[in-house]
Image (cartoon, rainbow, N blue to C red):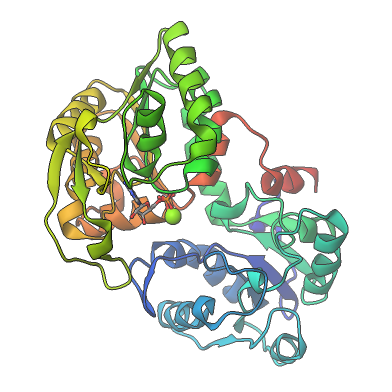
Length: 404
Ligand code: ADP
Ligand code: MG
């Protein structure tokens, strides 16, 4: 990958850059701006070089059409505060407003295009649709810088296709993330333990196969756990469940056993009455009840690991020399459902081994608990991207930079 340190003569040139600004929001308030901060070294460097900077980013998963709920307006505001400069947000992605905004840039200025996922071509599976959109992006830049580590596992127009059209460079964040994660793939000190949780069940189940090959032990909590518990024959009530993956989970459990590896699952869980959960306002209107995993009532939802599980997981982490953790153990945005995630965070922070925390919500959780970046070996901005990197997969957004 070419580094932006090799990028010379960009004064007055337009640098199109992909960042990962997919920050957690409560209403219009950014609850963790870590991903925006992580982009500052590259952006400041480009500004110092006198480039005209055009930023592409996404927020959430809008349905390929403009949706004010997913506007990057809160991001533009926060980025401006952090840069100490005005950041102009275009009213569209590649339309007349974007063209006008880019044309008005002066040296060192920063503009942000609207959420790239407002364009159906961005995430299209049809190559020609992505390529057509990438052509439009490419008209806004003389060179392309890829710095959105959290999206480099996506074959998307603003990550992959545009890099085929312009001279392309890796930003400082992408360089740094790859350097740290490589440490986990090249002879990691053992035992190597991977902790998985969170809510993107289907996405993340796919990584287990390969993680079983590289890690010694997998610890599974969060929303991920219930499909496994179901596969073991437990009833999971209203908990997050991916019916289509039950058999696959049963297969992973068998596979682990055959390979002499451990998949550690919850033995008790904190359950809630889901009708009393108001996630938007981060409130729960009823009690949390702890039950063993063979006693989850049909009308309740498992929303955190229980105290016995927290101890079990912490003990396993204590024995590890290398740790990677992605995905909260419960709905940790709600304080009464954060204990399991706190226990895992503490176990990692207390460890003398090398620990990496990855993922937008996981990073937000540990920062909300008061941890600093240097309490861990590394806090990665990428969840899915780091997992796929650790699996040994080729990430399209990195491969295309290596080709360049
Ligand atoms: P990351 O952003 O760290 O990669 P994910 O996006 O996969 O993690 O998952 C984070 C989300 O998972 C959080 O919003 C959290 O509330 C949710 N979550 C965790 N455990 C559960 C659970 N048991 N049931 C429902 N949602 C959960
Ligand atoms: Mg997330």
